[in-house]
Image 1 (cartoon, rainbow, N blue to C red):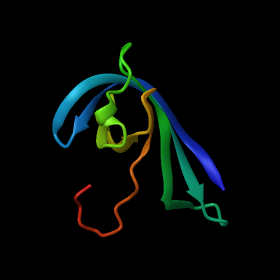
Image 2: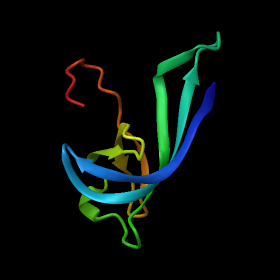
Image 3: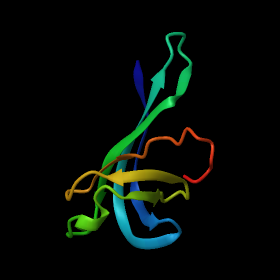
Image 4: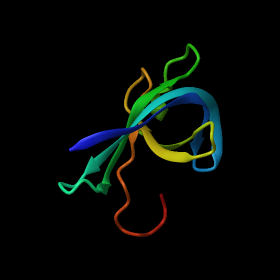
Amino acid sequence: MVKLVEESAGTGDLLLQSLVLRQVRYEIKVFQGMFANGLPNPAQRTVEGALDFGGDSARGDLVGANLTLQLQDGRKIGIVISDDAGTIHTRPVCTTGCSCC
């Protein structure tokens, strides 16, 4: 089972590593997978949403890139831009334990 746990919209920074590429408007939904006993499954947390580049479409070189979206409240999430329209999803969780992402 998957449960919607958060919806958020605001203005944030789009980052490539620590470099701020530009400011964007965002709308995100956070979904949490649940175990049969009702507890959350941390490996099944996904974010879906969209970025608004202020009239511009996403630059082609950003589509598919591993980026970070810093939300208005300061939290950061790893994202991938899926298409020129600005559709986003979360990066796969690193399972190696290397702390690089």
